[in-house]
Length: 82
Image (tube, helix red, strand yellow):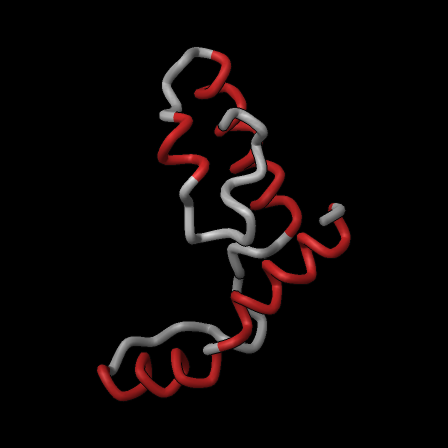
C-alpha cells in the first residue's frame, strides 16, 4: 500500500464521520475544541503510538493474531508482526 496511501486512508477514516461526531458531542453537552483541537491523527501522536507499540512488540507483549485482524487501521496494524 505504501506509507503515503496508508496515511491518507487513515486520515480519511478519521475524518469520515467528524461532522456526526461534532453533532453528537454538542447534543450530549460535552465541550470539545474542534477547530484547533488535538487529533489522534497528528503526526507526533502517531509516531509516539507506533514507538510504544514497537517497544511492546519487542518485549513479546503483542498478540500477532490480534494485530493481524485489527479493524482500526486499513490492512491490520501495519507493524509486520503477524
